[in-house]
Image 1 (tube, protein in one colour):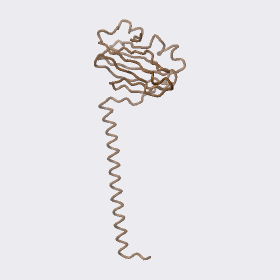
Image 2 (cartoon, helix red, strand yellow; image 1 turned 60 degrees about the horizontal axis):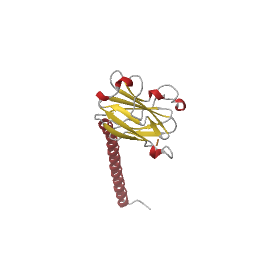
Image 3 (tube, protein in one colour; image 1 turned 45 degrees about the vertical axis):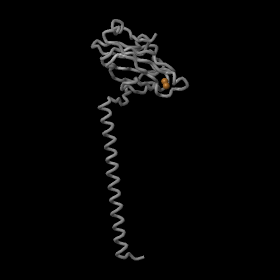
Image 4 (cartoon, protein in one colour; image 1 turned 135 degrees about the horizontal axis):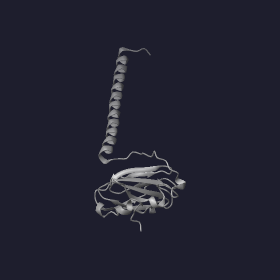
Length: 191
Ligand code: CUA
């Protein structure tokens, strides 16, 4: 069939409409991507999100025997500058210690290692929310402005006992914190 001037102009119109739609979609996609990137930047800056930072490795099979995560080291140690370092082992189906004691109003570094499978932990009412992958040390920095108690459940399904795996975080006045022991041996509120 020969192209009459009529069909030619119809084709041109169709092409123009197609291009317009394409431009519209391209603009919409760019706007969505920019909005999502903006959202990530905003939440990171505003809520103190922690991207995964598991660069430190550790042998999960010998955690308890020696080194940083041996029994006497677990719990909270106060550094010379007054900040707190909390060491916790996550294992099926408990956190050790099961009650973490921290002073209020000081920088707290949580260091958590798994002795078996992947666990997760979050501290309710705070920005702490991380995964604990065997073989790596999960480090999260936070602080607790007020004294009180927070729940710290495992939020990564880790087999049949998962729902019973949780700990507490007890925040006490920095003045009431048992700092004498905390320089040599980790302290906790686990009974
Ligand atoms: Cu540990 Cu779920």
